[in-house]
Each structure stands twice: as C-alpha cells, then as structure tokens.
Image 1: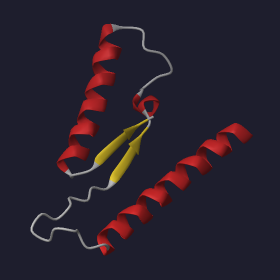
Image 2: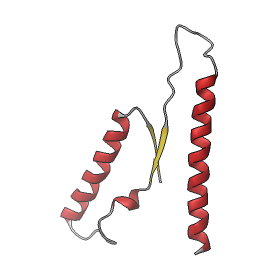
Image 3: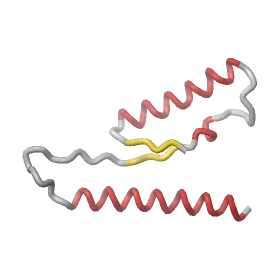
Image 4: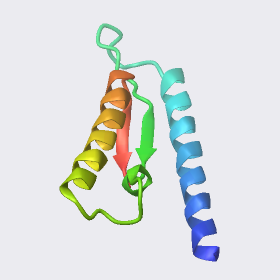
Length: 86
C-alpha cells in the first residue's frame, strides 16, 4: 500500500514540476526574438493503464493494446505535447 502511495506522490510531483517549468518558460524571453523557442507541455502516460485486462494472451489483445496506445499518443502529439512513457 505504501509503495502505491509513493508512486502517486511521485506522479503528482512530476505533474507539478512540469507545470511550473512550463509556466517559467513562458515568462522568460527568448535570446533571439526572431526565433522564439517552442514551448511544449509534457504529458506522462502509463502503458499498463491501456490494458483492458490483466494479461495479453491473444493477437487480438496485442492489436487492441497497440491501437489504444497509438490513438492516445497521436492525440497528444496533435495537441502539441511532449510525451513521457512510463
């Protein structure tokens, strides 16, 4: 139970850190105003959260799992985000 709590705290801390880093980057002026730095929000995903069941046992399970991940990653990229895989 305590290990699960630590993972939740760690995830929350990373989200806060990423949010604050993004906020700070937006307040800093780029060195070359003609070439502004692109600032991307970061999103963290946990691959196991895309499983429908506890085990992958069939080719259909593999295809479904990959399609779910592909869809999520594609949407995040379209939103202009960077992705951290866990």
